[in-house]
Length: 253
Length: 356
Image (cartoon, rainbow over all chains, first blue to last red; front, top):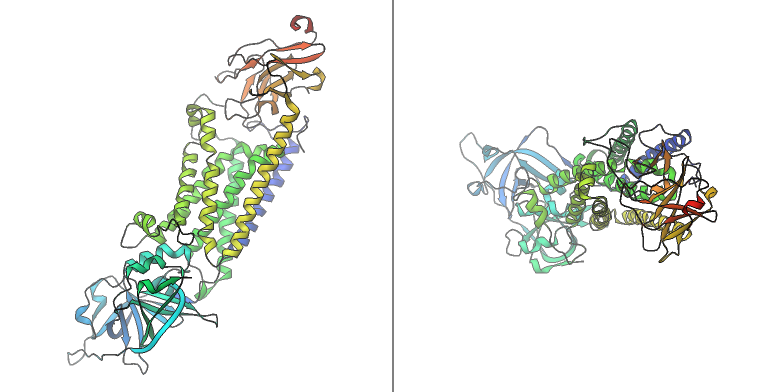
């Protein structure tokens, strides 16, 4: 103990006693080491947010048929195997522009892609012309209706997240600390997805819709970012899986 | 001590203190960001804003632990007193870092949506009865509000106008802020896949802080047990032989149920004052007589040995106590004289005059 009566006495406006000065330099060094070490240790607890990329540099153009399932998607029907890209607006908003006249029509969409393991999305540029009918030499636009394939009734366990953050807008875009953001995104029309952790270690996304095929019932929003199990009708369209489910059939694990 | 108010009364000590604290904060956040970037790269990289807000949050939490550790450390080993001296600077720094963390979190998690960030903050989760759904952000807001209150009232202006006792009580809310912080982390980050490690980290911090406070409390109790005199009803307390009090130092005594008294030995004899500094309630009896003034070990506030008045131009005053010599032992009166009352020091050979 340094509590003896001959212990150096410190007053802030007087010179620091030599013996105390040595001790204080040790305290300074120890503190710096402590802060460096604790930052390195704590930072190492952060886990892998997954392989997701938000290409938010130069906007690109994409061509395809626009469908609402119930969330708008751009499907490249010209490819041998049709593939779909979900469409969203800038910020935490689903497509909020009028696109009814474009349904099942060939369109050109310009924006930035988000991609997670081949599951893709386009964040549309904010100007209205970023989603427009594709022009052809003969002046006509073509469409090619697609039919979803039923995969039967299934029970899936996973976590409800918003697709935009999860596909790369925010990393990590899942779990409790992201709950508020995911809720705000889904309220704003960003398609909700169920993230299923596969035995292989990877993940799989399934779009969530209401049992009648419309957008997910807001009653299910309380279950966002929680471990859940749900049973519903599974379908597939252009490589995108969709589960039609009742809100009361979503159970917290 | 001051006769006027300025934002910060800078001294070389305070500049060095702030420089070290800033270096620690910068080192922490930089290490955090670099570690995060090295750990997860390319497609797996964590968003920079998330990395930053996590780093700032963790830094504020670590700083709050340091702040709470300084008090008991200084009690256990007085060599830590210089760290206590400017602790409020650490408090203000912690608030600013926590504010930056909150601004990033509210901006990115609650911004850019269909409702305002504050509405989102209050409505995104309201499952108050569920540990999993509990809005951990609210606990962060509580901690931040308390840190703001403490930072805003940290200046001596507020200390003077609120009174040391009220000010101290207000600043004891730091423990509520700490509890809110633990809840914020336990119901937030712990409930992610980092949970297991975080439980250990938060638990270790809690155990260390509790251990330090208990150890400091036990030591204070042991000191009290050695100093408290069973003097109920007695007007005078035995302090001991004059030679047992070191020159320019004090012995602390107390009658049960009363404020402690510090009996100082100095070149003119013996004088007694309350043990409580008028500034922040620091233990004057652990101080030293410098230039004829009792000097508080916490922040260097001074009082003249003869009358308990701060030297001009300062105006603070503390109660004084009469001292006498009885059968070769120093005794001090339990009756506190009004602050600033001049009492002649007990000089050697004064037994005849005071005995009675």
